[in-house]
Length: 546
View 1 (tube, rainbow, N blue to C red):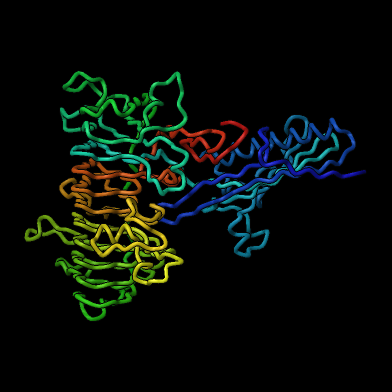
View 2: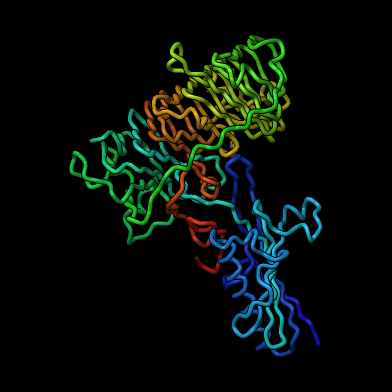
């Protein structure tokens, strides 16, 4: 009996065809994964009966569809409800049987045995093997799938109560350097405001606000698709003082499309993250809590006491600090001026000032003329208590221009040099001063509040500051003043964008664990080229439809 083997072409459009997909996943604690996944179907014809072989092939396709439905659902608990890696074992389907086996790709790549490579609660990268048998014929397929643990309704800017864009020439759009910008997806804003400005809530868009010119695809039957930016608001949005039936106003209101959610839909911010565990008595800063010059390589330290009632501040002025992997705790304020803070490896910074009658408005981060630069292996989470002040700061990647022989020109993001007035010079990588910073995945830098210190009285203020990252402040306000720039995402109780500020969204964040949950907005794009994101744990699918 002859056995034929067929590898299907990648561009096939039928169900079960091979596919190339890219999807991103990150846990709340901050680990990020870029999964380039591909699937491969191989046919094993164990019968000369062509009709039987075709039936087995169709059964394998159905089995794979069934497996994908199970894997993508957040109700099946497939990560722990398999049997030694078998999701389905001889499952009767369409007159035949289907067996589905799962392998945790990362475990296997780390050297785990076959028995130890089965999925568990942390699995996100899965190899799916499907074997279908019918009437003596057998067909098998092998696929690699990326299934994020959580996919939530992701918005470029989410303002729970108030989003106010005012001033001259503020910009909201896509980050040109971001990999997915070429797909020209929509930029989505969201709010839970249900009544505009009568109770100081809603969305206000000034007439000078600039948005992207186009988004894809355009649907001739839906005028909203002519707008690049959509604003989602709750079903119970009431009539405001101007008689509009949605809480979105201002002379620039018509520049965006508005989407009223159904009664069953909602958006809400996730809870503030759990506190960073106090580390076991790390040493104090070598040489004291005031560093005013020189270059220093730091290992995890503690400034002040987590149980004391007084503040102990850290002062870093006119110096360069390299923070290596670990947790840095400051029980007071971190005051920095004309400093460079370089991050190497996974780093957590906890700045937790103490409130008292003598310190009624405490500030955690208080930085001016300071840069934060992440090396290629860095992952930074800042947990800030109470107020945050950044004045003329720059937060982004540590960049080196390969091919530039002059080390002064080669080292440092040229955008940073121009932004900070640190002597931008042309190089092999930049012939003119760049308008945007070098690309850095925004999920690699996260600024969170300390849950126990949340209060609507304390704001985060970014004045003439450029920052790449994810900013999250669930019960307080974030202000962007002057010519501030943000590349990433924002979720806060209220967001104020003033002056000539710029907000740029990276659509790679669409598939990352978000700062909001609930409805997933329509991002546009070509459904044949990218996965239409679902509100639950659904992975990408090309050719088989939703």
